[in-house]
Image 1: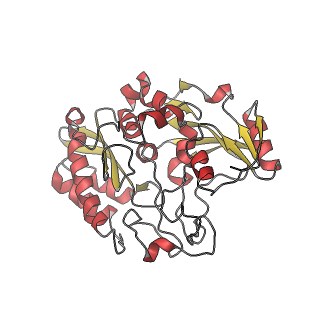
Image 2: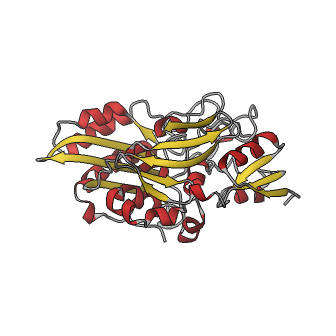
Image 3: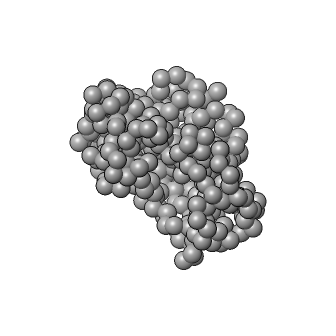
Length: 339
């Protein structure tokens, strides 16, 4: 590990100024991903700006519109087990608990979860060409071992996927990310926060230089009656999703009144298709309806040599998770917390 300097920020604006004005400065909170990348020789911060003491980012509070504000520095574990999250947004609680390990969830923060980097093997190999790590060097995954990679929204520059479980549920719930930077505060709808790779896969999200996340706002409607998060992976504990699905439904007399479906492990960002969700409205909640929605979601899906299986896997996961959402109390293996 290289030498570095360290300071403690006393306010979000001070943290923003420090990162913006100091060469090689980076924010640190839980550090579960940053320190990993540092150990792999992929990051070399010259200055760490510690934001762990920003008291305004450490709470979960109710909003006037009935929603909930999740402080950026609240741990993933405290969020998942918060009584209001469990009661009103059980989909989010389930998704968080499906990620990482208990130890990591105790340390990782909500803001950091949104900013974690891809787990593409070639991104983590400093000797391999990777446009996300070293723009213009090429994408080793396209012709390499691409079993975990994208089937939707990829580009000729990058086929990496975004690894978060929490963010898949946040996308389905329609969360809003609150940030602060040199130009003040602004709100970013969750669907606009992460981006597809295009020609600039090194840019993961919509944050401007110096901006930091202060909170994540959940809307008043949490789909607490009909929901399910299904994560399909190679082993039950401490593994990233091959395909994950967050499903949230409003159902009246067996007919779907509102539907949300977000996929993880298939693209550079949590994947939602508005047309597929709209197609479910007014339909009976059954396997046929979910299969039709899955076909819309997966239009244009393209596999590579080792991940063709993910297209059929995603379709089956969407159908299965739709049916599981009808009776959340009967969650099957794959929707249980990681150890």
